Amino acid sequence: MEDVTLKDRIYTHGGSENGLFIGTPGVRDGKAVLIYGRHGHLDYIDIDALSSQVRECLDRYMTNK
Image (cartoon, rainbow, N blue to C red; front, side, top):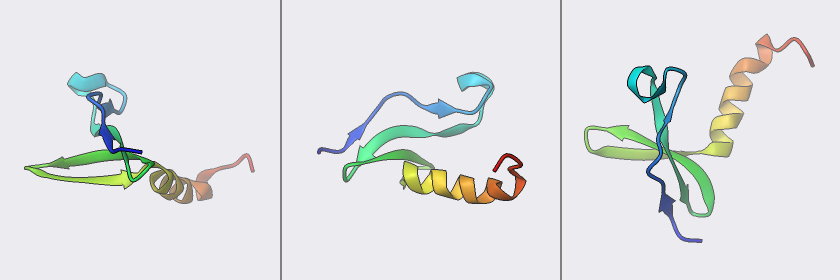
């Protein structure tokens, strides 16, 4: 599978005008990623890794287990 970067950007609530930019969706090495960065330096994070990190941080606050 070839690497792909989409033109869409993901923002938190508030949209592109008022929201916080999270990243640009893409595919790297066959995995879904979010591409982010500024000042000419771009990096990316695997969506599965991001989801795991968020889950770990929120697990202690989850009440419906």
